Image (cartoon, rainbow, N blue to C red; front, side, top):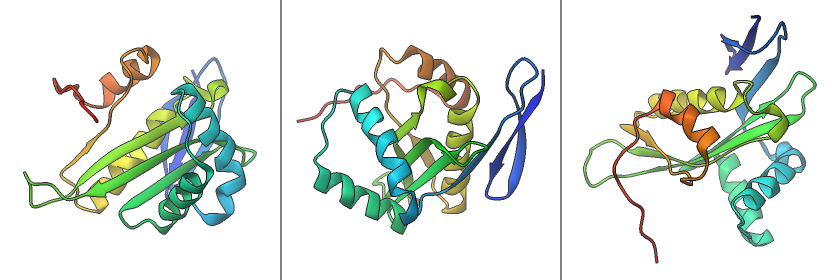
Length: 167
């Protein structure tokens, strides 16, 4: 098996990919010039979860993700520079800690890139960002039916017993 090099802010980490194929994925901070590439991924993500997000909310969210203060985003680009995935995170205070928490609110990888290590690389970049900001934990939710993603998540984090309620 060949190794793929996933680049995290200038650092490479070899990741097994497939039968003799080598792919390089670049993970970097989301920037204003990424809007046209991010939009179709965001639309596909929302469609996967059967969610409709108003265009005004999407524009405002993208703007805040690029600012990188309490919200931040990363984008994954393939060897040709095509956007193939993203993460959106929210850093917030906690009543149980002096340090902040990082909520990985959104993670999406284009269907044709799934299983190649892109999601793992994106999550590991979120971990690195959370560590750099001194966050105590990184957490996220997923749908119970999302078995493929959950099989990856089970290798990267511990599942908790919490059930989510919302109004």
